[in-house]
Length: 236
Image (cartoon, rainbow, N blue to C red; front, side, top):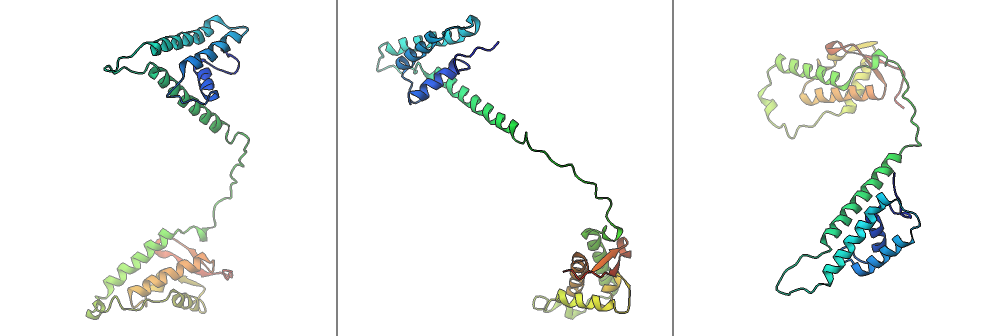
């Protein structure tokens, strides 16, 4: 059975209310004033469960004890702990727990009235669009390794590397599309057979990616057997 004194769930809740009502600092509680108001609230309660109300009475006794200690004379040479220190710590801890419970209550209600549509089964993607970028990267790396093994690089390949002009991707896109004038299907590895530099190989690879992205070609097959097929989509 829960006992609620008006709108307060316990003695600490009542004390926090009185502290806020009087606009005083929780670290410097005017015990005498708060105690009078605390007792006034208890006296105005018409019916109280004696077992649970004992918590409120026990807190009243503690406030009286703190008030009596504060009335005792203090010796300047002695450093005594503030009699309110324990009460302040309890109030701060209760305040933190109250804020945390409010936070989790709001999180628990968040999304309560939101309904999410279940994902639709769109089926399996067409075979020509199952290739991933990793498949193309592996195939391009194989072409690079073959090109490096086929012909040893000449001495001139090591000079002027920084200043060499890169091959434009647009140029390789045009070259690939021209090949479809005489062919319906084009093996991926054939695109690199006439490459004269690493820059041209990279540009060719990027051109294939761009054509596939804009749906101007389809990629079919696996590994080194990937083939390109021209589509009717202009990528617009």
